[in-house]
Each structure stands twice: as C-alpha cells, then as structure tokens.
Amino acid sequence: MTKGSINVSVENIFPLIKKFLYSDHEIFLRELISNATDATLKLKHLTNIGDAKVDYGNPQIEIKIDKDNKKLHIIDQGLGMTAEEVEKYINQVAFSGAEEFLDKYKDAAKDSGIIGHFGLGFYSAFMVAEKVEIITKSYKDAPAAHWTCDGSPEFTLEAHDKAERGTEIILHIAEDSTEFLEEPRIRELLNKYNKFMPIPIKFGTKEINDPEHEPKTTKDEEGKETTEPHRQITVDDIINNPNPAWTKQPADLKDEDYSGFYRELYPMQFEEPLFNIHLNVDYPFNLTGILYFPKMSNDMQIQKDKIQLYQNQVFVTDNVEGIVPEFLTMLRGVIDSPDIPLNVSRSYLQADGAVKKISSYITRKVADKLKSLFNNNREDFEAKWNDIKIVIEYGMLSEEKFFEKADAFALYPTVDGKYYTYQELYDKIKANQTDKDGKLVILYASDKDAQHSYIEAAKGKDYEVLLLDSPIISHLIQKLESTKENITFARVDGDHINNLIKKEENTISKLDEDQTKALDELLKEVISSEKFMVQLEAMDSEASPFIITQPEFMRRMKEMQQTGGGGMFGMGGMPEMYNLVVNTNSDLVGEILSTKTKKKQERLINQSLDLARLSQGLLKGEELTNFIKRSYEMIK
Ligand code: ADP
Ligand code: MG
Image (tube, rainbow, N blue to C red; front, side, top):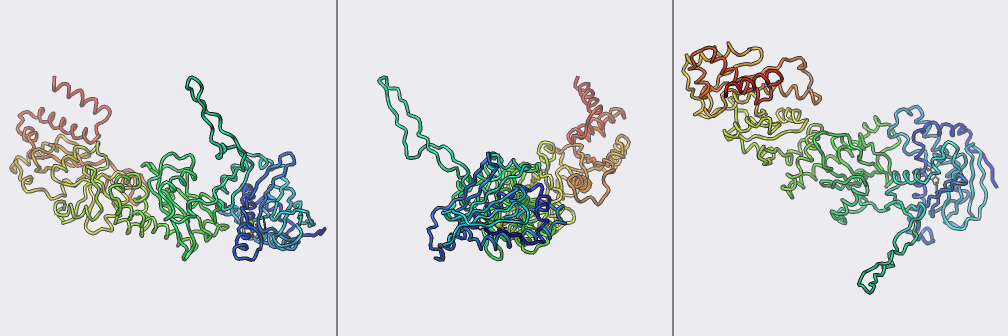
C-alpha cells in the first residue's frame, strides 16, 4: 500500500471547494458521470482504432444508492486506470486542475451564472462526500487499484481484486449532504444534467410488460372474452436517451421525430411547436442543436421552458444569454457546442469572439429558415404569422443583419386578412396613397373594433389598411420610416386625413367663403380650443360630419414611452390634444349652419362632438351619462 500526500499548496482546497460552489453542490454528479462517459468513449475510440484489444460490448454507467451505509456509487465500464494512472490523473492532474480553477475564479465567485459549471471535475466529489474511494481496473493488463481519500491531502493507494474493467467511484456522503442519498433527488439530477448523455445510464430497475409475451384472450361458454394480464419483467431503468435528435443528421429525421424530441425536452408542454430549426456547423466552430418556435401570445411572458445549453450532450445551463441573440431567447430547444467557454464570467462571454460568431450564425440560420418556410409554403407561414411576429419584429429591431434579411419574409397583414411583404405593399399602394410631399402613406389600425369607423372610411377611399397590433410596433414603424425611403406610417384614426391627397370630387366645398367663415366662428365659440383644434375639410358628403383624430407623432411618442425606449422627449406631462375635423360637405353641417336659433345650433354641435368622442372612446364618466340622458330626451 502506498500512502502519500497530495501537493502541499493544495492544503486548503477542500474548504474552498465546499464554500465556493455552495449553491451548486449538485454538479458533482454531473462531473463524475461526465468522467465515466469520457472513460467509456475513450475505450470505444481505442477499440475502434485497434489500440485496445478488448471487447467494447454494450457498456453502461450505473448509479447506485446504498442508503444504509450512506454511500453513492458511480460505476462505469470504461478504460479504467492503472495505479500509476491514478497517481498521475487523480493525484496530480485533477488536483492541479481544481487548484488552478479555484485560484482563477475565487474572487469572481459573485459573478455566478456560468461560473461553477465545469472546471472542478473529479474533486467536486468532495463538496458532498467526507471520503471518496476509487476502485479501478484498466483495460491494460494490470492489477486493479484502490484509492481512498478522506478530504485531507493524505490518500492511500493499494491493490484491489476487482476483476472487471472499469471504474467505480464510491462517495461516502457527508452529514450535511444526505439529500444525495434520496432516490428522487438523484433521479431529479440525472434528469436535469444527464438526460441526453451518450452512454446509457442505469439507475435501478423497473417493471415493464414483457414484449416477448402476448397475453392470451379466451372465450367462455357465453362468449365473454377475458384477456390474461401482461407478464411483467424486470429491466434496467435507463434514465437517458443516448442518441437525442440534435445529434442526428437533419436528413434522417422526420417531422414526428422533431416533435417527439420537443416532448422529450419539455414533457410538460402540451402545445405543438410551430416549426423547428436544425443547427449544424463544424466550421469555424462546432455547434449543433434544434430550436423550436413555440406558439406565442402577445404578452411576452417570461418563459419557464427555455433553450438549454449542452456541451457534448452534458447539460450546462438554461441561461443562454449572450450566446443566443436576445430576440431568440423566446424560442425553445437545445444548442450543443464544445466551443463555448463555460467556466468564465458572462461579461467575458459577451466579448468573446467565438461566442459572437456563434450568436450571429444562429441569427443567420434562423433568418434563412424563416425565408425558406415563407418561400416553400407561404400559406402556412401566413397562418403562423400571428404567433411568430413578436420574435421577428423584435429581431428586426435589435439585430441589423436580421432586419435586412427579414425584408424578404416579414409580413404586413391588412385588416381584411391579406398579407403583404414590404415590397408587395409598396407596389400595391404607391399609386394611391401619397401625401402632398409625395411621401408614401402607409395606413394602419391597431385595433379593428375600436377603430372600426376610421377603417371603414379609409377603405371607402380604396386605401389599404394594415393591422399592426404588436406591443412593440411603434418602435418598428419608427425604424422602417428611418430606413425605407420616403414613407410615413399613419394610424387610421390619426391626422393623416388631412395629409393624404384627396380625390378630386371630394375637395370641392359645398360652402362658400362667407358660410365657411361663419361656421368656423360658430364652432370656435362652442368648442373648447384647449382640447380640440378645429379644422374644416370638404370631404365626401357620406363621410362622418365630425371626426376626432390625434396627431400621429404625439400618439406614437406616448406609445413608445410606454413600451420603453424612445423616451427622449418629456411627453409625460403633455396635455391631451386632438384634432376635430369637420366635414363641410356633410348634410348635418349644412343643417347646423341653417338652424335659426343659437341655442339649437349649440345643441347640435355639442351632440355631434359627443358622438365623435364616443366613437373614439373618449366619452367617459359624467359626460357619458349626460350624453345618454340627452339623447333619450331627443328621441322622446
Ligand atoms: P477532466 O475530466 O477535465 O480531465 P477531472 O478532474 O474530472 O478532469 O478528471 C481527472 C482525470 O482523472 C481525467 O482526465 C481522467 O484521466 C481521470 N478519470 C477521472 N474519472 C475517471 C474514470 N471514471 N475512468 C477513468 N479515468 C478517470
Ligand atoms: Mg471531468
């Protein structure tokens, strides 16, 4: 038996390990299973190239709880270690690795996030164990070795009679970590970190119906059928899927494989994803994965089921901030890359060149996929637009490259359920919807019901009205106006009515100059100039007599303030100011003018104004009550 002392400077490593990763103690299991996986895959490689003349077989990794003796076993059938290798890899390499890691990051302990993932390796076992044993037999022809260490730098190393190849790690669980002797807790960890690791992981056994046995059905005299019960057999409970969908080639996967994998990832999600994007690069970095567009509602709720980051099929984190562009963090799925540096801080991650490349690759890939979905099945794409627009619009706002690419597939739906690309919309309205300066005016509604009368009026003039109702739409509109040449957006109930070039027949006023002047004076007398800017317009006689609009600019600034950003103007304390457009060609206005008594004229004006306010949802409280009372009086 050898006794020894591990590197002196390492004296204080155990208390540090315990303290440092306090909240992350559970990762010890992932680390030990990763080592077991590495050892198995290394053996596979050696047998493949003919360097190990042993039978690889069907190795698995077993996790065993021995609650009575407070032990947890991790057993693999990998390449094992000789006594010399234990000396080298455990006593020297692993220790120096742990030491270096702690040295580097102990000051950054507060910057948790990704720190604490990986790096400590084998010695993370001491976060939960007061004593660790390794019993290992190499695939090489050498006796098995038994290493024991109780957490002090002293260890023992002796021969062991283990006959089968592989390594068994025995953790003597410490008093404060007995949770790791509970079956449900270990199952939870295996599910979280090891669900897709490449070697089957056995955790106990389970009963299943014997697939070899077909239960017999018999009929009695009365013809009643009885089927005998299934025969039960006991099998290993393998907790992982060693070949998850993302590790396969897209060509080998069908739609149901993708939706099956989605369910595997998020067993509690009952809704089908809208579509998926299979990521697969090997140059200039390695990255695989599958992203899913979930069905999404307008309120960007914080999601529980997030994108998961793996490194060679080992779960690392579901905080992918910095790696996946922000607008895509609303998606679900997995990404797996050995090239993402894990044991570094988030700020470092964001500045890292490789990570930036990964992020822009993902953006590009998502844009390409959206484009091909649009091209291949436009109808389907349109049907899904409402569920995906938030992501796309957010992407257009936040990523310049995505904005450019999205021009090909971003859709602008109309109130009648047609969908235009920007170019199609442009071609459609360029002849008919320009203002006095020759600018293209894109009309839109944000609420079909609330703006119904305005939409109808605009449609009556053959204007195309879009339905843009995302919460961030005012930001996107602002961006489109500043990128596209010579266009302006105007909400249907806004002041565009004065800006759009009117058709010839509507511009001739029925009133002469004197009448117009008289009307103007009368209106200004009755209507408060603090609330309404009265404008006389000669419109189609069928159009509403009184129309309230709000200046586009003012309304949009307010909206943008509400949804963040754009707050450079102090719009908070701005008074509500509306335009009141009075249609001088309407019959009612003619009647107001010809009415004899002042009192009656005032009544007509106030009633009309209230109707206009009512249609904008501006009449409330006492004013609304009074209006309704008055209206009943009138029809009595
Ligand atoms: P890393 O896995 O990053 O190399 P670890 O501290 O986890 O660092 O492990 C140190 C070394 O110990 C490994 O590189 C490997 O050589 C050896 N080792 C650990 N666990 C096993 C195992 N189950 N089978 C064979 N070798 C192992
Ligand atoms: Mg390791």
